[in-house]
Length: 332
Image (tube, rainbow, N blue to C red; front, side):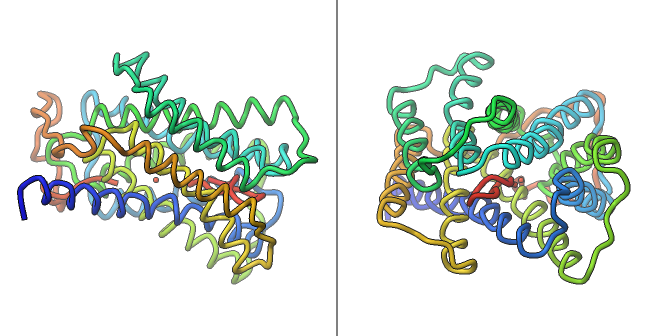
């Protein structure tokens, strides 16, 4: 096997592992609708982020220092704290899968943000892939009687833009030298959860009473749907261009539709299957071209963040986050 074959094989493996994150996010709708208390989107968002973040933070015993305090806070808000409630708001105000279609615009937002902030000019191929992805997701989840609520539309677009901005900045900044993937994930989950805490208390009041299935559902969402999934997502961002990783998010509504068909008895028409094929084509097209993978970034130590503050993390590990939703993909 040649060196080029090895690189391609490694890139395919990274792509496949990173793609597991949106596939897991696609299970959120089924778990939420079947096991969790109804009409508590802010509490659900909080429970997905803060407990997992605090557990990982205690386990890794690594805190951000210097410029990374602000960076971790910003990434936590973009990827978690703002994204989750905006996604839920769109999901509750937009029937018929409209929120899923708006969310599928995230790759296009990522291309625009990378161009504006990082001066990375998007290729025509990636722009075409973004349009194809939106069309495919629309065929999977959109219904003819779907209503458009202005607040819901703005929330859906803002949520997609927030996640896209977090994805681009995470890929651009990488992570501090000596900080492992779990520690990096814990910073963002904790920051996002702390941002959500007062919002949940103000908008929904005291937490609801939880039965056994609800506790199990929150454990699943926190451990697998958030902590593990975001660890894989951020790991992929450390090895692949952010504008390529963003296209993998199109897998989430497709996963949600298949799970709804298998587990919840929802219909799956030939037109929806065609939409899945088109969306997968957009996902694959978004990965093609040079620069599909890259070495894991190694940054010089920040003078304000000595390497000795990080313990219990492998410096060779690579980094880590929700997104399916009601109507087969609208909850992150």
